[in-house]
Structures are given as C-alpha cells and as structure tokens.
Length: 370
Image 1 (cartoon, rainbow, N blue to C red):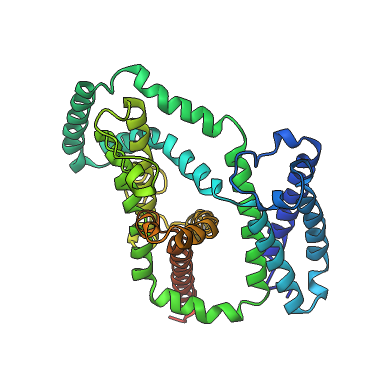
Image 2 (cartoon, rainbow, N blue to C red):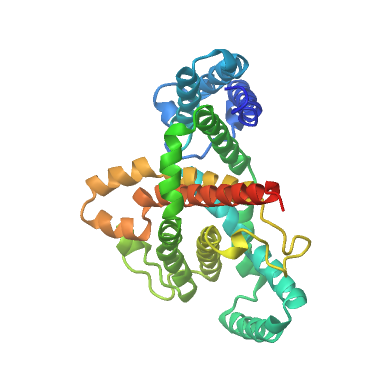
C-alpha cells in the first residue's frame, strides 16, 4: 500500500490540514467563514451555524491519523475510511452555491479572457488578423449603437465582480472541493483494481461521452445569450413569471447575461479539449508553451473539480424533477444536472485513461532496444 499511495498520501494529509484550519476558523470566527452564502448546507440542519465547523475539525484530525497509520491498515479499511472522509465533506459542505460561485467567477473573467484571446490571435495567428480586426470593428460599432459604450453599463460587471470576489466564497468552495478530490484520489490509489475495468470502458467510449458532456453546456448558454436581445426566458422555463419583452432587461443585466453565456460556451469548448489534439498538445500559437505536451493534471484537476460542482446540484435537481413534474422536464433540458456531473466526470476519466495509455506506450517504446 505504501508504494501505490506515495503521491496521494501527502496530498490527503494536506487535505486534512485544510479541514482542521477551516473547521477551526469556522468555530473561532463563524461570521467570517468562507461558506457563507452556499445554498442548503446540509450540516446546518444538525448543528447551529457557529458550531458547524466541528465535523471539519474532527474529520481533519481523524484524517491525519489515517494518513499516519495507513500502511498498517488492511487495504479495505484504508479505502473505506478515505472514501468516507471525501464523501462526507462533499455531502455535508457542498450545495447549490458551489456551481454558482465557480460559474460566476468564470463569467466575470470573460471580458479579460476575450481581450487576451484577441491580442494573442492578432500577434500569433497571421491568417486570423484581418477577420479578427473586422469582427472587432463590427462588434464595437454595434455595441456603441446599442449603448454598451456607456461606462455605466459596465458597472454591472464590476458590481458582480465585487460580489463574487469581495468575500472568500470562491476560495472556500475550491478548498472544500480540493479536499474531496484529495481523499477520493487516495481511496482509489489504495486499491485501483475495482476501478480499472470501469476506467477501461470509459476510455473506450470517451468520445461520445465527452461530446454529450460538452453539449450539456449549450442550452444554458443560449438562454443567457438571449439576454443581449432583451429576451429573458427564465420565467416561462423555470416558472418565475412571464416572458420579459425587449425592455425587460437593462443594458448592464444584458451584458452580465452575455458573460454567463460565453462562460458556459467556454466550459463546453474546454470539455471538447478532452478529445481533441489541443487537449494533449498545446497549439503552436500558444505563448511560451506552444507544441509542448499538456500536463495531465492541468486537465484532470479542474475537470474533476467542475464535475464535483455539478454533482453537488444533483440532489436538488432530482427532488425538483419529481416534485415539479412535468414542467421539470423542460428545466432539466436547459440545466441537465441529473446527467451533467456524471458525464463530465466520466469524460475526465476517459481523458485520464487515454493519456495514461499513451504514456505507457511511450515508455515501452523508449525502453525497446534498437
């Protein structure tokens, strides 16, 4: 067990220390906890909010003990204990706000990402320069005519930026997701045999799985991009009012909707990278890293975190699917949470299996006598 878990044990130990630190922080300063605002914290149903750090604190201490004695435990005991810590933290401290925090965090970065992409395209990709210039000029003219050049319009994005990053909410979400990943990774590495056959199947079918996972991003992207035209379909789709007319949304709100829509599209494109060449080798036009191999963890870690964030939506989605049937079928089509998280995690697993198989072939070829 010691050799197979060598990389995962220190990571799990760090996860235990994070649990202790956050649990202690919660107990000492409950008003400053990074989880304020996360929806439906399940642990709050059992403990007062100012005492909700105890499970994290005690779980972290137990985790440190587990890491210390792991090599002396039977395999099944170590595996079950590691999985229980990871699943326990996930089930107790993750909620609907997890995905919102991550999605909004990406959305407020969209203008910067577009600007960086535009600059890189103009400098590094010669055949794209003229199309990019024409598109930029056209978008600028349309934006000015529509009123988006007004500085007050962009205040909406700045307000959301302060709302998302003004507190430690995103930091707290990512910390707890990282803790879950650390313990679940340790549980798998202790005895990977039960997962090998599943990984083989997912790797063999990774293309249709990944395409399906990427398609899950599209309906939400369309709904939010329609805000640019002043059309808010949230009401008729989710049962919260009537269809807004073209004047139902101010320009700032339309801009925010566009950012959310573009963020969703970027998420779908990133998922497709799990089966495309640029997901394995950086394109030549990438600054500094062009033509180099993409580190496996660079795709697996954020992909797993995102998959867990979607899984955190599953309990609420399944409850609403039953309670609000048949209208919930339309909601599930726009936000397919019952399948979104599982598909995304399987897509990441298929990418991992594919890259590991490639590495084995490369090592075998390097060791073959010439």
